[in-house]
Amino acid sequence: MSINEKQIEKGFEYAKERYAAYGVDTNAAIERADAIAVSMHCWQGDDVIGFDGTGELSGGIATTGSYPGRARTPGELRQDINAALSFIPGKTKLNLHASYAEKNGKTIDRDAYTIEQFSGWLDWAKENGLGLDFNPTYFSHPMMDGDFSLASLKEDVRKFWIEHGKRCREIALEFAKGLNQPCAVNYWMPDGFKDTCADTRYYRELMTRSLDEIFAAPIDKELVPCSLESKLFGMGVESYTVASHEFSLGYAIRNNLFYTLDSGHFHPTEYISAKISAVLCYLDKILLHVSRGVRWDSDHVIALDDELQRIMDEILWNGFESRVFIGLDFFDASINRVMAWAIGMRNARKAILSAALAPIEAIRKAEREEDFSSRLALLEERKTLPSGAVWDYYCHTKGVPVGENWIKQAKTYERDVLSKR
Image 1 (tube, helix red, strand yellow):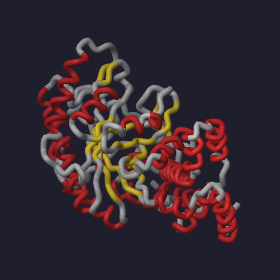
Image 2 (cartoon, one colour):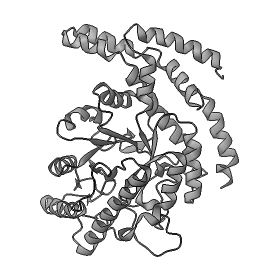
Image 3 (cartoon, rainbow, N blue to C red):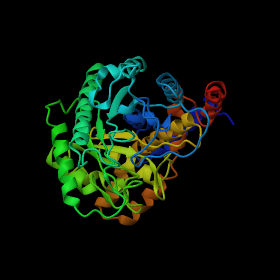
Image 4 (tube, helix red, strand yellow):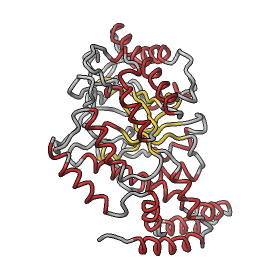
């Protein structure tokens, strides 16, 4: 059932009154939430295949499903991203992997990429008013030594991937200059063993030396903030991951880098929302990869669940907007990929808006007065305040579909575009 403009405005007026009773300025909350950038990942649209010629996934990466309509070219992928963006309000960036280089027939490998292989993405970002973030691609390549890259025992393999890491910083600098905003670069390496490792120290020493070479060049950290991403385990590296949480966090602190918390890269009983304020006691900024873990698989489309809301609460309630880069990271090939983007991005935005609307001052007042009963009561009351009515109004004012209206438009795009591929 469609909702009309009069209903939207009526609902918003009611919501404003309800939030005002808690001392919340609804319009100010909308403005605050709208300004927070969320980086939408390019790899949902083509199942992480990329365009630099490898053609298949390796290194602990896998997608499941064969839903029709996967983007096969950079042009198709950008077209699909534009379609998804038409359903998404708020400040948006695109998170790009190096494997999405456009070689245009040239013989060039990842250790020699320059901005030339990404000029199409830069031009497109300028045209669409988007920022860009970037990722070296340490997987799905003949120069991977099994599951090893920067910690490989083979010097030529390490050298190749060190050069790739250097080139990615240089490309990111061109993105930042061209778009007049920072380009965050996230380093994730799958290096590790399926079974017990007998020399855990040596591989981490190799990783450290390789990273030291990558970050040796003095590139402006304000324009190109670089971050290290950890992982508990991956397929084929279940027993030993070189760039573990402790390694990656320690390296980031020691070398004045950023650290990436991925919501699917920890034990199922751990939550990255509980780590954000702790890590930011020791680091200036962090990156987030927001996904939804289901058992062993960490990359489901994010739902508007408790953990997503806790993540955004931690950021906004602590005033961390300028210290956290928010990026999404999921890939589902079993459903319409454009709709997957829209669902995830809209949910991220809903959680951000809900965090901005929360009566946190009243909640904290109760806490500081040691009135923990009232604190719990207010936290629970917050859950049923009319944030949905504010969300509808926000979407309406931003010119994106309200409620379920976007679904019909997405299915029309599937019929007219995706189904013909």
